[in-house]
Length: 301
Image (cartoon, rainbow, N blue to C red):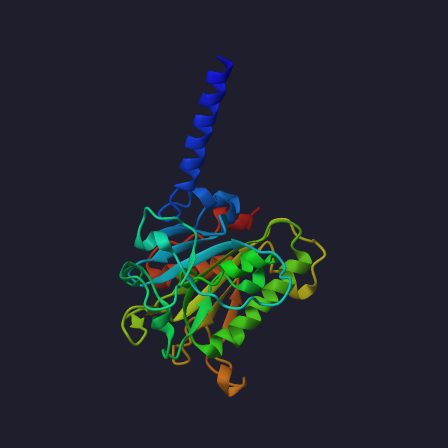
C-alpha cells in the first residue's frame, strides 16, 4: 500500500506539473494577476490578454490587439534599474501564432519568420525603414534584474513611436517616474502604460499591418509611500498619470505644445495629470469607460 500510494503521489505530481507547463499564457490574465493592483486588470478595453513569460517566469502582462498588431497596454511592477540597458534581442509571442505551443517569448530566428507568426503579430520587418522606433510600453528602465529587462524586448510590448517622443519627452517621463518611485514608494508600485489610437482614421506603418498610436499614456499606483514628500510631488502619490504626443501635427486639445523646446522634440510634449483626468481622456477617445486601477488606486480614501 505504501508503495502504491507513493506511485499515485508521483503520478498526481506529474499531472500537476504537466498542467502548469501547458497553461495558456495567451487569453487569460489569471496566471499573472500579480502585476495588477489588487489583482484587478484595467476595465473597459477589449483585447487578448498575454501573460508575458520569459525563461519560465512571468515578467509582466499585456492586453494585445490582434487586429492592430500592437498592445493596448502593458502592466508591470516597478523596480529601480540596475546595470546597463541590455542589448535588444527582439522576441515574439508563440501562442499568438499557435495556441498549443510553449508560452515563453521567443527570439526571432534568422531568416524569414514563420507565416503563422507574421499573420498573428508584428515582426521586425514591419519596423525596418518605417520612420518609427519600437517604443516600449513596459520599459527596460523600470526593472532591476537582467532577466526582467531582457523580457521587455518583445514586439508584443511595443508600439510605433516617433524618435522625437521616444528619445525626448517620453524618455524624460520614464526617467522621472523611475526617480520618484525609487525614492518615495515604500511598497509595490504598479504601472500601466498604453496607447491611444487616432480618433477618426487609423494610421499604419507603411505596409498597412501595424497601427500607429496618436498618443501614449502611463499611470502608476503606489499605496505605501513616504509621507514626507517634497512640494513638487505632493500630488504625485498614491497615483499619477501622463499622456504624451506621438504626432507633432496633432491638435492641442489634450496635450499643448511647448514651442520653446529643441527642434527634434517639438510637438512631442508630455502632460502630467491626475489619474481620473487620464481616465476622462481615455473615455472620450476610446468611447468606453476605462478604469486603470481598482477603485482608482484608492485616491478617495
